[in-house]
Amino acid sequence: MGKSGEIYERLRTDILGGRLTPGQRLKFPDLCARYGTSVGAAREALTRLVTEGLVASQSNHGFTVVSLSYGDLAELTSARREVEPLVFAMAVREGDMAWEAAVVAAHHVLARTPFFGEGSREHPSAAWSAAHTAFHLALLEGCPNRRLRSIACGLREEAELYRTWAVSYGQESEEEIALEHRGLLEAVVERDAVSAAERLRHHISHTARLLIKGATDTPA
Amino acid sequence: MGKSGEIYERLRTDILGGRLTPGQRLKFPDLCARYGTSVGAAREALTRLVTEGLVASQSNHGFTVVSLSYGDLAELTSARREVEPLVFAMAVREGDMAWEAAVVAAHHVLARTPFFGEGSREHPSAAWSAAHTAFHLALLEGCPNRRLRSIACGLREEAELYRTWAVSYGQESEEEIALEHRGLLEAVVERDAVSAAERLRHHISHTARLLIKGATDTPA
DNA sequence: CTAACGGAAACTTTCGAAAGTTGCTATCGT
DNA sequence: ACGATAGCAACTTTCGAAAGTTTCCGTTAG
Image 1: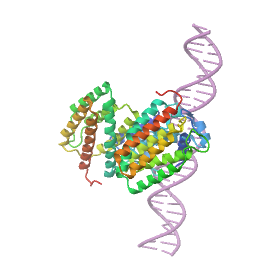
Image 2: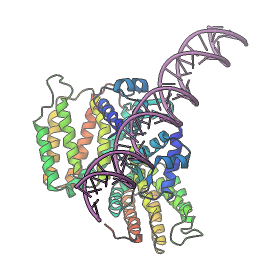
Image 3: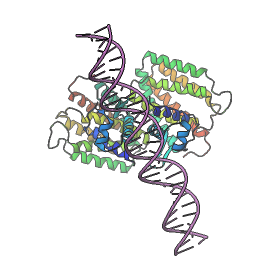
Image 4: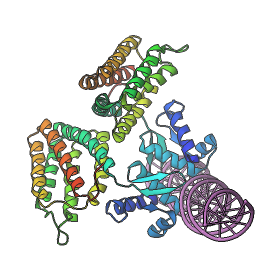
């Protein structure tokens, strides 16, 4: 992997990790200093992030971290409600036993990881977030179609931004969410594709609603 | 639009137009001479095409036009069978009257354009191909979700490569295809989303089968 | 005759300075 | 005081040469 791939990874994790705020301008002088690289490498990394929907660019106006809005969250959620269940259903139908085992494993660590960490009572712990992402990726991994898988994963990644910037999760959501995760696991081991799709669609709608409720300004 | 956007367009049309053969190596010296540009501009254009699936890249081994294979066609078709009908159904449910009118117009043009041109009896005319693409894009355009639309259009574009390199179309297919197009139009004006999705799924399967039959070597 | 090694050619990747563009500010005229 | 204009400053974009890689071929030793 070339050098620009390295800065691409770092930029991506910095955006997803909340170290760069949505809407923030990404100037080359700053970037080069921050990551110790040349403009060329930074430029290539940024253009890759643009196609993934994490960075926006205007001609001759540079690059910015994408800005969050209720309208966009609604559109993103609508897209995820359509494609993720579809991909998940295909995984349930066609995934092999190794996949099934990976899902069971991912659910196990998710279930055993505490929702809130030592610090905040508002944001889920980094460990839980990681386990949560891993579980959902594991669910989709069973789909044998590379293209569909990467489409679904791409949408989930865009949603990740909204998750990291969500103001707060309600205390009561924790159990409901855990219940839904168990339901998804159940659909996998029982190989019930239609139930799987239905449950995932509901889960996406539910969690998106939590993000909307948590925010301060009015929904679009 | 910058200079690299210009060469991006030219490269894209050259690939889609069959002037660059699948699997062909794309060397910077050649590219710079062909399009009269610098390596930097060519590089940016290529990386953009990689994310669209029209060009493949290996680290330190340069770029190539994607190579066609039966396995890949099968996967691509499978993906299209899932997402295009979904997007089309959403268009039928939510598209406004202006969209409906655009579909009627696009179908009119398509129906009046002769399938075979002056020259070959094997390949559809360039005019028909253009009208065909325009019709299908018009169908998807009614979907209000920008992300879903661009996903569906992206998949169609990848399929375009297989269409331009298909060995030949059977003579009898012309009428069957025209019939299916009329069916799609009908589903739009009658606002029947489930029929629309079903018809489009069938149409995709059918045309993909024609491509497979037309090829000379054995399917995977 | 085969295999390993060395070296050169061709190409990809990276870099940073030059050129180009935009938006702001200060100055001048009304 | 207000508006217009010209110049400036900051930044983006582009370019092509330098550096780094891989591949291939010819040579030599076994």
